[in-house]
Length: 583
Image (cartoon, rainbow, N blue to C red; front, side, top):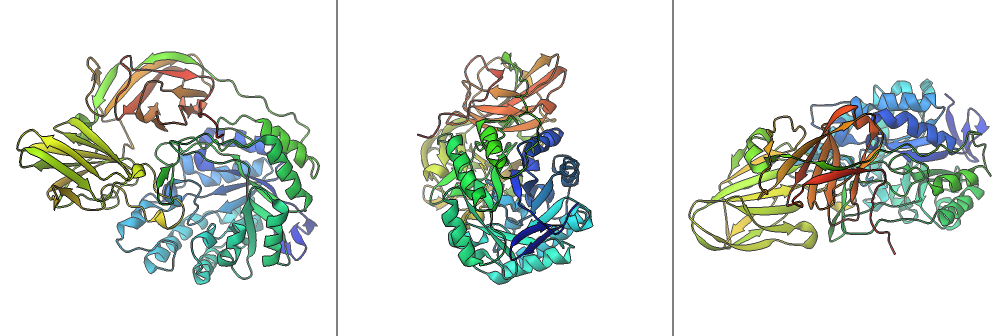
Protein backbone atom coordinates (compact mmCIF):
# COMPACT_ATOMS: atom_id res chain seq x y z
CA UNK A 1 0.00 0.00 0.00
CA UNK A 2 1.16 3.60 -0.65
CA UNK A 3 2.45 5.72 2.22
CA UNK A 4 0.88 9.06 3.19
CA UNK A 5 3.12 12.10 3.49
CA UNK A 6 2.28 15.56 4.78
CA UNK A 7 4.02 18.72 3.60
CA UNK A 8 3.22 22.44 3.48
CA UNK A 9 1.22 22.03 0.27
CA UNK A 10 -0.98 19.15 1.42
CA UNK A 11 -1.18 15.37 1.37
CA UNK A 12 0.97 13.21 -0.87
CA UNK A 13 0.74 9.51 -1.51
CA UNK A 14 4.11 8.10 -2.48
CA UNK A 15 5.10 11.56 -3.64
CA UNK A 16 1.97 12.33 -5.69
CA UNK A 17 -0.67 14.91 -4.62
CA UNK A 18 -3.53 13.13 -2.87
CA UNK A 19 -6.98 14.05 -1.59
CA UNK A 20 -8.58 11.87 1.07
CA UNK A 21 -12.16 11.03 0.08
CA UNK A 22 -13.21 9.05 3.11
CA UNK A 23 -16.33 7.89 4.90
CA UNK A 24 -17.09 6.66 8.40
CA UNK A 25 -17.83 2.94 8.62
CA UNK A 26 -17.67 1.43 12.11
CA UNK A 27 -16.99 -2.30 11.94
CA UNK A 28 -18.47 -2.77 15.41
CA UNK A 29 -21.85 -1.41 14.25
CA UNK A 30 -22.10 -3.80 11.29
CA UNK A 31 -22.49 -7.58 11.27
CA UNK A 32 -19.08 -9.02 10.26
CA UNK A 33 -20.64 -10.99 7.41
CA UNK A 34 -21.69 -7.65 5.88
CA UNK A 35 -18.37 -5.80 6.14
CA UNK A 36 -17.32 -6.66 2.59
CA UNK A 37 -20.62 -5.43 1.14
CA UNK A 38 -20.41 -2.08 2.92
CA UNK A 39 -16.77 -1.58 1.90
CA UNK A 40 -17.54 -2.34 -1.75
CA UNK A 41 -20.31 0.26 -1.72
CA UNK A 42 -17.91 2.82 -0.22
CA UNK A 43 -15.64 2.34 -3.21
CA UNK A 44 -18.59 2.54 -5.62
CA UNK A 45 -19.60 5.94 -4.22
CA UNK A 46 -16.14 7.19 -5.15
CA UNK A 47 -14.36 6.94 -1.79
CA UNK A 48 -10.69 5.99 -1.64
CA UNK A 49 -10.59 5.66 2.17
CA UNK A 50 -12.78 4.55 5.06
CA UNK A 51 -12.57 5.70 8.67
CA UNK A 52 -13.34 3.74 11.78
CA UNK A 53 -13.21 4.31 15.50
CA UNK A 54 -12.00 1.51 17.76
CA UNK A 55 -14.21 0.82 20.83
CA UNK A 56 -11.94 0.11 23.79
CA UNK A 57 -14.88 -1.23 25.83
CA UNK A 58 -15.59 -4.05 23.35
CA UNK A 59 -11.97 -5.00 22.78
CA UNK A 60 -11.10 -5.00 26.49
CA UNK A 61 -14.37 -5.76 28.32
CA UNK A 62 -12.44 -6.55 31.51
CA UNK A 63 -9.05 -5.32 32.65
CA UNK A 64 -7.46 -8.74 32.14
CA UNK A 65 -9.43 -9.73 29.00
CA UNK A 66 -8.57 -8.51 25.51
CA UNK A 67 -10.22 -9.74 22.33
CA UNK A 68 -9.93 -9.00 18.65
CA UNK A 69 -12.11 -11.66 17.07
CA UNK A 70 -15.70 -12.26 15.97
CA UNK A 71 -17.65 -9.01 15.89
CA UNK A 72 -14.50 -7.01 16.73
CA UNK A 73 -12.06 -8.78 14.39
CA UNK A 74 -10.40 -5.54 13.35
CA UNK A 75 -7.59 -7.26 11.40
CA UNK A 76 -10.20 -9.03 9.27
CA UNK A 77 -11.96 -5.71 8.60
CA UNK A 78 -8.66 -4.10 7.59
CA UNK A 79 -7.91 -7.04 5.28
CA UNK A 80 -11.28 -6.57 3.58
CA UNK A 81 -10.68 -2.84 3.17
CA UNK A 82 -7.30 -3.52 1.57
CA UNK A 83 -8.82 -6.13 -0.72
CA UNK A 84 -11.32 -3.51 -1.91
CA UNK A 85 -8.46 -1.08 -2.61
CA UNK A 86 -9.44 1.26 0.21
CA UNK A 87 -7.12 3.09 2.59
CA UNK A 88 -8.05 3.40 6.28
CA UNK A 89 -8.06 6.20 8.86
CA UNK A 90 -7.85 4.56 12.28
CA UNK A 91 -9.23 6.35 15.35
CA UNK A 92 -8.33 4.24 18.41
CA UNK A 93 -9.21 6.81 21.07
CA UNK A 94 -8.86 5.91 23.87
CA UNK A 95 -12.01 8.07 23.96
CA UNK A 96 -14.14 8.01 20.79
CA UNK A 97 -17.51 9.66 21.64
CA UNK A 98 -19.40 8.21 18.62
CA UNK A 99 -22.72 8.18 20.51
CA UNK A 100 -21.28 4.90 21.80
CA UNK A 101 -21.64 3.62 25.37
CA UNK A 102 -19.29 5.64 27.55
CA UNK A 103 -17.53 7.08 24.51
CA UNK A 104 -15.82 3.69 24.22
CA UNK A 105 -14.16 3.91 27.65
CA UNK A 106 -14.58 0.56 29.44
CA UNK A 107 -16.85 0.55 32.48
CA UNK A 108 -14.25 -1.16 34.68
CA UNK A 109 -12.29 2.09 34.78
CA UNK A 110 -15.11 3.52 36.89
CA UNK A 111 -14.63 0.83 39.52
CA UNK A 112 -11.78 3.08 40.69
CA UNK A 113 -13.60 5.60 42.95
CA UNK A 114 -11.45 8.65 42.23
CA UNK A 115 -10.35 8.03 38.66
CA UNK A 116 -10.22 11.05 36.36
CA UNK A 117 -10.87 9.98 32.79
CA UNK A 118 -9.18 11.70 29.83
CA UNK A 119 -6.48 13.20 32.07
CA UNK A 120 -2.93 12.41 33.17
CA UNK A 121 -4.31 10.58 36.19
CA UNK A 122 -1.86 7.63 36.53
CA UNK A 123 -4.79 5.24 37.03
CA UNK A 124 -6.15 6.24 33.63
CA UNK A 125 -2.86 6.50 31.74
CA UNK A 126 -1.60 3.11 32.89
CA UNK A 127 -4.81 1.52 31.59
CA UNK A 128 -4.53 3.40 28.30
CA UNK A 129 -0.90 2.41 27.79
CA UNK A 130 -1.79 -1.22 28.40
CA UNK A 131 -4.72 -1.01 25.97
CA UNK A 132 -2.67 0.59 23.20
CA UNK A 133 0.02 -2.06 23.62
CA UNK A 134 -2.53 -4.87 23.33
CA UNK A 135 -4.35 -3.26 20.39
CA UNK A 136 -1.60 -1.77 18.27
CA UNK A 137 1.16 -4.35 18.52
CA UNK A 138 -0.76 -6.92 16.43
CA UNK A 139 -1.93 -4.15 14.08
CA UNK A 140 1.59 -3.06 13.06
CA UNK A 141 1.48 -5.11 9.81
CA UNK A 142 -1.61 -3.11 8.79
CA UNK A 143 0.18 0.24 8.82
CA UNK A 144 0.87 1.70 5.38
CA UNK A 145 4.59 1.81 6.18
CA UNK A 146 4.48 -2.01 6.43
CA UNK A 147 2.34 -2.48 3.32
CA UNK A 148 -1.05 -2.24 5.03
CA UNK A 149 -4.06 0.03 4.46
CA UNK A 150 -3.83 2.28 7.57
CA UNK A 151 -2.66 5.68 6.30
CA UNK A 152 -2.96 7.70 9.52
CA UNK A 153 -3.97 7.34 13.17
CA UNK A 154 -5.91 9.83 15.29
CA UNK A 155 -4.82 10.96 18.75
CA UNK A 156 -7.77 11.06 21.20
CA UNK A 157 -10.97 12.62 19.84
CA UNK A 158 -12.30 16.19 19.97
CA UNK A 159 -10.28 16.72 23.12
CA UNK A 160 -10.55 20.51 22.83
CA UNK A 161 -14.23 20.26 23.76
CA UNK A 162 -13.26 18.52 27.03
CA UNK A 163 -9.94 19.90 28.26
CA UNK A 164 -6.75 21.75 27.39
CA UNK A 165 -3.95 19.56 28.74
CA UNK A 166 -1.48 19.37 25.88
CA UNK A 167 0.79 17.17 27.99
CA UNK A 168 -1.97 14.54 28.13
CA UNK A 169 -2.26 14.51 24.34
CA UNK A 170 1.51 14.37 23.95
CA UNK A 171 1.62 11.35 26.27
CA UNK A 172 -0.89 9.56 24.03
CA UNK A 173 1.10 10.45 20.92
CA UNK A 174 4.31 9.10 22.48
CA UNK A 175 2.51 5.89 23.47
CA UNK A 176 1.25 5.43 19.91
CA UNK A 177 4.79 5.86 18.60
CA UNK A 178 6.15 3.48 21.22
CA UNK A 179 3.61 0.90 20.05
CA UNK A 180 5.02 1.06 16.53
CA UNK A 181 2.66 3.57 14.91
CA UNK A 182 4.94 5.28 12.39
CA UNK A 183 2.29 6.68 10.04
CA UNK A 184 1.12 10.31 10.38
CA UNK A 185 -0.86 11.25 13.46
CA UNK A 186 -3.74 13.73 13.50
CA UNK A 187 -6.24 15.36 15.84
CA UNK A 188 -9.79 16.53 15.15
CA UNK A 189 -11.80 19.28 16.84
CA UNK A 190 -14.64 21.63 16.16
CA UNK A 191 -13.24 24.96 14.88
CA UNK A 192 -13.71 26.81 18.18
CA UNK A 193 -11.77 24.10 20.03
CA UNK A 194 -8.77 23.76 17.71
CA UNK A 195 -6.31 25.55 19.97
CA UNK A 196 -7.13 23.41 23.03
CA UNK A 197 -7.19 20.10 21.17
CA UNK A 198 -4.12 20.39 18.96
CA UNK A 199 -0.61 18.99 19.47
CA UNK A 200 2.47 20.82 18.20
CA UNK A 201 3.84 19.04 15.14
CA UNK A 202 0.72 16.90 14.63
CA UNK A 203 -1.80 17.48 11.83
CA UNK A 204 -4.91 19.33 13.07
CA UNK A 205 -8.25 18.77 11.30
CA UNK A 206 -11.71 20.25 11.82
CA UNK A 207 -15.22 18.84 12.33
CA UNK A 208 -18.28 20.60 10.89
CA UNK A 209 -21.27 20.01 8.63
CA UNK A 210 -21.82 23.34 6.88
CA UNK A 211 -20.20 26.73 6.14
CA UNK A 212 -17.12 24.92 4.82
CA UNK A 213 -15.27 28.02 3.63
CA UNK A 214 -15.71 29.75 6.99
CA UNK A 215 -14.66 26.70 9.01
CA UNK A 216 -11.67 25.94 6.81
CA UNK A 217 -10.58 29.58 7.19
CA UNK A 218 -10.60 29.02 10.96
CA UNK A 219 -8.49 25.89 10.48
CA UNK A 220 -6.05 27.75 8.22
CA UNK A 221 -5.74 30.52 10.80
CA UNK A 222 -4.73 27.88 13.33
CA UNK A 223 -2.42 26.03 10.93
CA UNK A 224 -1.11 28.34 8.16
CA UNK A 225 0.43 25.47 6.20
CA UNK A 226 -0.34 21.85 5.45
CA UNK A 227 -3.45 19.95 4.37
CA UNK A 228 -6.99 21.11 5.01
CA UNK A 229 -9.36 18.37 6.10
CA UNK A 230 -12.75 17.88 7.69
CA UNK A 231 -12.42 14.63 9.63
CA UNK A 232 -16.10 14.69 10.57
CA UNK A 233 -18.14 16.26 7.80
CA UNK A 234 -21.57 15.89 9.38
CA UNK A 235 -24.07 14.91 6.71
CA UNK A 236 -26.73 13.54 9.08
CA UNK A 237 -27.33 13.15 12.80
CA UNK A 238 -28.29 10.66 15.49
CA UNK A 239 -31.65 10.22 17.26
CA UNK A 240 -32.56 10.11 20.93
CA UNK A 241 -35.47 8.41 22.66
CA UNK A 242 -38.41 10.79 22.89
CA UNK A 243 -37.19 12.96 20.02
CA UNK A 244 -37.73 13.02 16.26
CA UNK A 245 -35.93 11.11 13.53
CA UNK A 246 -33.42 13.62 12.18
CA UNK A 247 -33.06 13.97 8.41
CA UNK A 248 -30.95 16.29 6.27
CA UNK A 249 -31.96 17.26 2.76
CA UNK A 250 -29.67 15.40 0.31
CA UNK A 251 -29.59 18.31 -2.15
CA UNK A 252 -28.47 20.75 0.53
CA UNK A 253 -25.93 18.24 1.91
CA UNK A 254 -24.51 17.70 -1.60
CA UNK A 255 -24.16 21.47 -2.07
CA UNK A 256 -22.21 21.68 1.19
CA UNK A 257 -19.96 18.84 0.00
CA UNK A 258 -19.38 20.59 -3.31
CA UNK A 259 -18.36 23.77 -1.46
CA UNK A 260 -15.92 21.79 0.67
CA UNK A 261 -14.30 19.91 -2.20
CA UNK A 262 -14.03 23.09 -4.28
CA UNK A 263 -11.53 24.41 -1.71
CA UNK A 264 -9.22 21.45 -2.40
CA UNK A 265 -9.74 20.06 1.09
CA UNK A 266 -9.94 16.40 2.03
CA UNK A 267 -13.05 14.98 3.65
CA UNK A 268 -14.32 12.17 5.83
CA UNK A 269 -18.10 11.84 5.87
CA UNK A 270 -19.58 11.25 9.29
CA UNK A 271 -21.17 8.86 8.55
CA UNK A 272 -20.92 7.02 5.20
CA UNK A 273 -22.76 4.10 6.82
CA UNK A 274 -23.92 4.39 10.41
CA UNK A 275 -25.10 0.87 11.22
CA UNK A 276 -26.68 -0.16 14.51
CA UNK A 277 -26.09 0.09 18.26
CA UNK A 278 -26.74 -3.61 18.73
CA UNK A 279 -27.48 -4.96 22.20
CA UNK A 280 -26.89 -2.39 24.94
CA UNK A 281 -24.16 -0.37 23.21
CA UNK A 282 -25.86 2.99 22.62
CA UNK A 283 -24.49 6.02 24.41
CA UNK A 284 -26.22 9.05 25.89
CA UNK A 285 -25.79 12.79 26.30
CA UNK A 286 -26.24 14.78 29.50
CA UNK A 287 -26.31 18.53 29.14
CA UNK A 288 -28.20 19.02 32.41
CA UNK A 289 -30.75 16.45 31.23
CA UNK A 290 -29.90 12.84 30.46
CA UNK A 291 -30.81 11.81 26.89
CA UNK A 292 -30.11 8.22 25.78
CA UNK A 293 -29.48 7.47 22.09
CA UNK A 294 -31.70 5.03 20.19
CA UNK A 295 -30.67 1.62 18.86
CA UNK A 296 -30.53 2.64 15.21
CA UNK A 297 -27.47 4.56 14.06
CA UNK A 298 -28.84 5.05 10.56
CA UNK A 299 -27.62 8.67 10.82
CA UNK A 300 -29.41 9.57 7.58
CA UNK A 301 -26.18 8.42 5.92
CA UNK A 302 -25.56 7.78 2.20
CA UNK A 303 -25.81 4.07 2.98
CA UNK A 304 -28.79 3.40 5.27
CA UNK A 305 -28.93 1.10 8.27
CA UNK A 306 -29.57 -1.95 6.05
CA UNK A 307 -26.71 -1.02 3.72
CA UNK A 308 -28.89 0.29 0.89
CA UNK A 309 -27.85 3.37 -1.14
CA UNK A 310 -30.01 6.45 -0.54
CA UNK A 311 -30.65 9.65 -2.48
CA UNK A 312 -27.70 11.08 -0.60
CA UNK A 313 -25.46 8.28 -1.95
CA UNK A 314 -26.39 9.21 -5.52
CA UNK A 315 -26.07 12.97 -4.91
CA UNK A 316 -22.66 12.62 -3.25
CA UNK A 317 -21.42 10.31 -5.99
CA UNK A 318 -22.28 12.95 -8.58
CA UNK A 319 -20.42 15.63 -6.62
CA UNK A 320 -17.36 13.43 -6.08
CA UNK A 321 -17.25 12.71 -9.82
CA UNK A 322 -16.53 16.41 -10.42
CA UNK A 323 -13.28 16.12 -8.47
CA UNK A 324 -12.08 12.51 -8.78
CA UNK A 325 -12.68 9.37 -10.83
CA UNK A 326 -15.73 7.38 -9.76
CA UNK A 327 -16.07 3.67 -10.63
CA UNK A 328 -18.07 3.04 -13.80
CA UNK A 329 -20.13 0.35 -12.08
CA UNK A 330 -23.78 1.30 -11.48
CA UNK A 331 -25.22 2.24 -8.10
CA UNK A 332 -25.94 -1.04 -6.29
CA UNK A 333 -29.63 -1.96 -6.02
CA UNK A 334 -31.45 -2.25 -2.71
CA UNK A 335 -31.12 -5.68 -1.14
CA UNK A 336 -34.07 -8.05 -0.88
CA UNK A 337 -36.05 -7.96 2.37
CA UNK A 338 -38.33 -10.56 3.91
CA UNK A 339 -41.67 -10.24 5.69
CA UNK A 340 -43.49 -12.50 8.11
CA UNK A 341 -46.48 -11.23 10.05
CA UNK A 342 -48.02 -12.07 13.42
CA UNK A 343 -45.30 -14.32 14.81
CA UNK A 344 -46.71 -15.61 18.14
CA UNK A 345 -44.55 -15.57 21.26
CA UNK A 346 -46.17 -18.45 23.09
CA UNK A 347 -43.85 -19.16 26.02
CA UNK A 348 -42.67 -16.99 28.87
CA UNK A 349 -40.05 -16.77 31.64
CA UNK A 350 -40.48 -14.18 34.37
CA UNK A 351 -37.38 -12.08 35.01
CA UNK A 352 -37.71 -12.21 38.79
CA UNK A 353 -38.39 -15.95 38.77
CA UNK A 354 -35.31 -16.40 36.55
CA UNK A 355 -33.04 -13.96 38.37
CA UNK A 356 -30.99 -16.64 40.14
CA UNK A 357 -29.89 -18.18 36.82
CA UNK A 358 -29.12 -14.80 35.25
CA UNK A 359 -26.79 -13.48 37.95
CA UNK A 360 -25.62 -14.08 41.49
CA UNK A 361 -26.75 -11.80 44.32
CA UNK A 362 -24.16 -9.90 46.36
CA UNK A 363 -24.99 -8.79 49.91
CA UNK A 364 -23.92 -5.35 51.14
CA UNK A 365 -25.04 -2.56 53.41
CA UNK A 366 -25.71 -0.16 50.52
CA UNK A 367 -26.64 -0.94 46.91
CA UNK A 368 -23.58 -1.63 44.75
CA UNK A 369 -23.05 0.06 41.41
CA UNK A 370 -22.68 -1.89 38.20
CA UNK A 371 -18.99 -1.06 38.20
CA UNK A 372 -18.53 -2.41 41.73
CA UNK A 373 -20.25 -5.58 40.52
CA UNK A 374 -17.87 -5.87 37.55
CA UNK A 375 -20.74 -5.32 35.12
CA UNK A 376 -20.85 -3.22 31.97
CA UNK A 377 -24.28 -3.49 30.30
CA UNK A 378 -27.78 -4.57 31.24
CA UNK A 379 -29.68 -4.34 34.54
CA UNK A 380 -29.16 -4.63 38.27
CA UNK A 381 -31.87 -6.03 40.55
CA UNK A 382 -31.68 -4.56 44.05
CA UNK A 383 -33.71 -6.14 46.86
CA UNK A 384 -34.25 -5.46 50.54
CA UNK A 385 -36.81 -6.19 53.26
CA UNK A 386 -39.01 -3.44 54.69
CA UNK A 387 -39.58 -4.09 58.40
CA UNK A 388 -42.86 -2.26 59.01
CA UNK A 389 -46.24 -1.88 57.29
CA UNK A 390 -47.76 1.49 56.41
CA UNK A 391 -47.12 4.46 54.10
CA UNK A 392 -43.52 4.84 52.89
CA UNK A 393 -41.58 7.49 51.00
CA UNK A 394 -38.75 5.96 48.97
CA UNK A 395 -36.01 8.36 47.85
CA UNK A 396 -33.20 7.38 45.50
CA UNK A 397 -30.40 9.93 45.57
CA UNK A 398 -29.22 8.95 42.08
CA UNK A 399 -31.10 6.91 39.48
CA UNK A 400 -28.78 5.63 36.77
CA UNK A 401 -30.81 5.43 34.64
CA UNK A 402 -34.32 4.03 34.98
CA UNK A 403 -35.64 2.33 38.10
CA UNK A 404 -38.74 0.14 38.17
CA UNK A 405 -39.94 -0.31 41.75
CA UNK A 406 -41.82 -3.41 42.95
CA UNK A 407 -43.30 -4.42 46.28
CA UNK A 408 -43.67 -8.17 46.78
CA UNK A 409 -43.41 -8.52 43.02
CA UNK A 410 -46.12 -5.98 42.21
CA UNK A 411 -45.15 -2.80 40.32
CA UNK A 412 -45.58 0.44 42.27
CA UNK A 413 -43.84 2.98 40.04
CA UNK A 414 -40.98 4.07 37.80
CA UNK A 415 -38.28 6.70 38.45
CA UNK A 416 -36.40 8.07 35.44
CA UNK A 417 -33.13 9.94 35.44
CA UNK A 418 -34.22 11.68 32.25
CA UNK A 419 -37.14 13.26 34.09
CA UNK A 420 -35.08 14.09 37.21
CA UNK A 421 -37.27 11.76 39.29
CA UNK A 422 -36.06 10.57 42.69
CA UNK A 423 -39.01 9.87 45.03
CA UNK A 424 -41.95 7.48 45.15
CA UNK A 425 -44.66 7.01 47.78
CA UNK A 426 -46.53 3.75 48.38
CA UNK A 427 -48.01 1.66 51.17
CA UNK A 428 -46.27 -1.41 52.57
CA UNK A 429 -48.93 -4.08 53.24
CA UNK A 430 -47.06 -6.11 55.86
CA UNK A 431 -43.88 -6.40 57.85
CA UNK A 432 -41.24 -8.25 55.86
CA UNK A 433 -42.41 -7.09 52.44
CA UNK A 434 -39.70 -7.31 49.78
CA UNK A 435 -38.78 -4.11 47.99
CA UNK A 436 -37.27 -4.74 44.54
CA UNK A 437 -35.70 -2.04 42.37
CA UNK A 438 -34.80 -3.04 38.82
CA UNK A 439 -32.38 -0.49 37.36
CA UNK A 440 -31.57 -0.30 33.66
CA UNK A 441 -28.33 1.11 32.30
CA UNK A 442 -29.77 3.04 29.34
CA UNK A 443 -26.32 3.99 28.06
CA UNK A 444 -23.32 5.67 29.66
CA UNK A 445 -22.80 9.30 28.77
CA UNK A 446 -20.45 9.62 25.80
CA UNK A 447 -19.71 13.37 25.68
CA UNK A 448 -18.51 16.02 28.10
CA UNK A 449 -17.74 15.80 31.84
CA UNK A 450 -20.64 13.39 32.36
CA UNK A 451 -18.52 10.48 31.10
CA UNK A 452 -17.86 9.58 34.76
CA UNK A 453 -21.24 7.83 34.61
CA UNK A 454 -21.54 5.05 37.15
CA UNK A 455 -24.67 2.94 36.79
CA UNK A 456 -27.26 1.45 39.12
CA UNK A 457 -27.93 3.25 42.40
CA UNK A 458 -24.68 5.14 43.15
CA UNK A 459 -26.09 7.27 45.97
CA UNK A 460 -27.97 6.75 49.19
CA UNK A 461 -31.40 5.13 49.36
CA UNK A 462 -33.72 6.69 51.95
CA UNK A 463 -36.89 5.22 53.42
CA UNK A 464 -38.93 7.84 55.26
CA UNK A 465 -35.92 10.13 55.37
CA UNK A 466 -33.45 7.64 56.89
CA UNK A 467 -30.83 5.74 54.92
CA UNK A 468 -31.95 2.15 54.44
CA UNK A 469 -29.28 -0.56 54.69
CA UNK A 470 -29.15 -4.28 54.12
CA UNK A 471 -29.40 -5.00 50.38
CA UNK A 472 -28.67 -7.60 47.76
CA UNK A 473 -27.42 -6.41 44.38
CA UNK A 474 -27.85 -8.88 41.52
CA UNK A 475 -26.18 -8.09 38.16
CA UNK A 476 -28.29 -9.06 35.15
CA UNK A 477 -26.01 -8.45 32.14
CA UNK A 478 -28.11 -10.70 29.86
CA UNK A 479 -25.07 -11.71 27.84
CA UNK A 480 -26.64 -15.16 27.48
CA UNK A 481 -30.24 -16.30 27.79
CA UNK A 482 -29.43 -20.03 27.60
CA UNK A 483 -30.27 -20.68 31.26
CA UNK A 484 -33.84 -19.39 30.97
CA UNK A 485 -36.62 -21.95 31.30
CA UNK A 486 -39.77 -21.08 29.39
CA UNK A 487 -43.30 -22.31 30.04
CA UNK A 488 -46.57 -21.81 28.23
CA UNK A 489 -47.89 -18.26 28.62
CA UNK A 490 -51.43 -18.71 29.92
CA UNK A 491 -51.87 -15.51 31.94
CA UNK A 492 -50.72 -11.92 31.66
CA UNK A 493 -47.42 -11.30 33.48
CA UNK A 494 -47.27 -8.85 36.38
CA UNK A 495 -43.58 -7.96 36.06
CA UNK A 496 -40.76 -7.97 33.50
CA UNK A 497 -40.85 -11.15 31.44
CA UNK A 498 -39.05 -12.84 28.57
CA UNK A 499 -41.36 -13.96 25.77
CA UNK A 500 -40.26 -16.50 23.20
CA UNK A 501 -41.51 -17.89 19.92
CA UNK A 502 -40.25 -19.54 16.75
CA UNK A 503 -40.75 -19.02 13.05
CA UNK A 504 -39.76 -20.90 9.91
CA UNK A 505 -37.84 -19.53 6.92
CA UNK A 506 -37.10 -21.06 3.52
CA UNK A 507 -34.45 -18.43 2.86
CA UNK A 508 -32.82 -15.48 4.60
CA UNK A 509 -32.69 -11.76 3.89
CA UNK A 510 -32.53 -8.52 5.84
CA UNK A 511 -35.71 -7.57 7.65
CA UNK A 512 -37.06 -5.30 10.38
CA UNK A 513 -38.64 -6.41 13.64
CA UNK A 514 -41.75 -4.42 14.53
CA UNK A 515 -43.13 -4.63 18.07
CA UNK A 516 -46.44 -2.80 17.77
CA UNK A 517 -48.29 -2.88 21.08
CA UNK A 518 -45.20 -3.65 23.16
CA UNK A 519 -43.92 -1.03 25.61
CA UNK A 520 -40.19 -1.22 26.40
CA UNK A 521 -37.43 -3.78 26.45
CA UNK A 522 -34.93 -5.69 24.35
CA UNK A 523 -35.07 -8.28 21.58
CA UNK A 524 -32.90 -11.18 20.42
CA UNK A 525 -33.09 -13.44 17.36
CA UNK A 526 -31.20 -16.73 17.49
CA UNK A 527 -29.30 -15.35 20.47
CA UNK A 528 -28.14 -12.22 18.63
CA UNK A 529 -28.96 -9.05 20.61
CA UNK A 530 -30.78 -6.70 18.23
CA UNK A 531 -31.11 -3.82 20.70
CA UNK A 532 -33.66 -1.84 22.66
CA UNK A 533 -37.21 -0.91 21.72
CA UNK A 534 -39.44 1.68 23.38
CA UNK A 535 -42.93 2.86 22.52
CA UNK A 536 -41.71 6.37 23.37
CA UNK A 537 -40.11 6.40 19.91
CA UNK A 538 -39.10 7.77 17.53
CA UNK A 539 -37.67 4.40 16.48
CA UNK A 540 -40.38 1.75 16.19
CA UNK A 541 -38.55 -1.13 14.54
CA UNK A 542 -35.25 -3.00 14.91
CA UNK A 543 -32.93 -3.91 12.05
CA UNK A 544 -32.36 -7.66 11.64
CA UNK A 545 -29.25 -8.46 9.55
CA UNK A 546 -29.70 -11.40 7.19
CA UNK A 547 -26.71 -13.31 8.67
CA UNK A 548 -28.55 -13.49 12.01
CA UNK A 549 -31.28 -15.59 10.40
CA UNK A 550 -31.15 -19.17 9.14
CA UNK A 551 -33.21 -21.44 6.94
CA UNK A 552 -35.54 -23.62 8.97
CA UNK A 553 -36.46 -22.78 12.55
CA UNK A 554 -35.54 -19.42 14.06
CA UNK A 555 -36.05 -18.30 17.66
CA UNK A 556 -37.07 -14.84 18.82
CA UNK A 557 -36.94 -13.64 22.43
CA UNK A 558 -38.39 -10.36 23.69
CA UNK A 559 -37.79 -8.94 27.16
CA UNK A 560 -40.81 -6.78 27.95
CA UNK A 561 -40.29 -4.65 31.01
CA UNK A 562 -43.89 -3.54 31.33
CA UNK A 563 -46.76 -4.97 29.30
CA UNK A 564 -47.70 -5.98 25.79
CA UNK A 565 -50.98 -6.35 24.03
CA UNK A 566 -52.79 -9.55 24.89
CA UNK A 567 -51.98 -11.38 21.63
CA UNK A 568 -48.20 -10.98 22.16
CA UNK A 569 -47.15 -11.19 18.52
CA UNK A 570 -44.41 -9.48 16.51
CA UNK A 571 -43.89 -8.79 12.82
CA UNK A 572 -40.97 -8.98 10.44
CA UNK A 573 -41.47 -6.35 7.76
CA UNK A 574 -39.60 -5.20 4.67
CA UNK A 575 -39.23 -1.58 5.74
CA UNK A 576 -38.11 0.15 8.94
CA UNK A 577 -40.00 2.71 10.97
CA UNK A 578 -37.52 5.20 12.41
CA UNK A 579 -40.25 7.58 13.46
CA UNK A 580 -41.58 11.02 12.56
CA UNK A 581 -38.97 13.36 11.14
CA UNK A 582 -37.77 16.56 12.72
CA UNK A 583 -39.83 19.55 11.67
